[in-house]
Image (tube, rainbow, N blue to C red; front, side):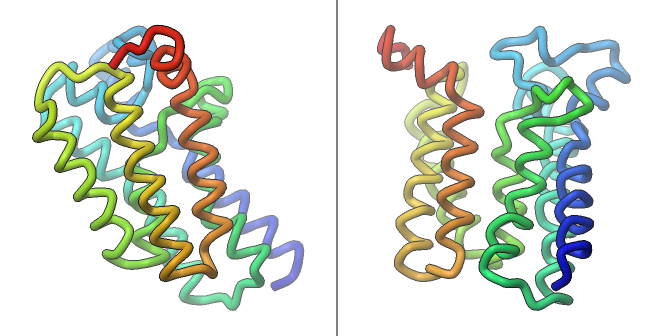
Length: 198
């Protein structure tokens, strides 16, 4: 792939990822998600504020922006290892560092599901979904942002191990994805370390 095409696809992925669907939907109802709970302008907070229907719509849209563009890119192009590392991570970068919100975006969980659906079909989403389901049984309601962070990072660390064993061609994507999720949950991680708050 030419460098021009690579830059174009990376930017397209980044810009699509930067569309903050939850924030937009909430604004229709005159709600600023950044002022609620942990300030995450994502689908989980929209769900808490406006119910399951709008929450699921927003989460599904965040999933699709990680899945659809990447699926078509990797199915239509032969990517070098470098391109295969950066193009998949671009929508997540867009979501976490969205220019729509002064480069302060969401946590990136639904977009992560979408990215790995494009790369591994059902495999990684099944791992992440299983971890999330287990955590639901541990604590079903009134979870703290810190608990949510442990859930998200537990799923991502298991994904990292699985990718190393079964899909090592995607290991750099998994490493970057893990680093970005750690960054997007840095406040919660600090709270856990300093206050042992879960």
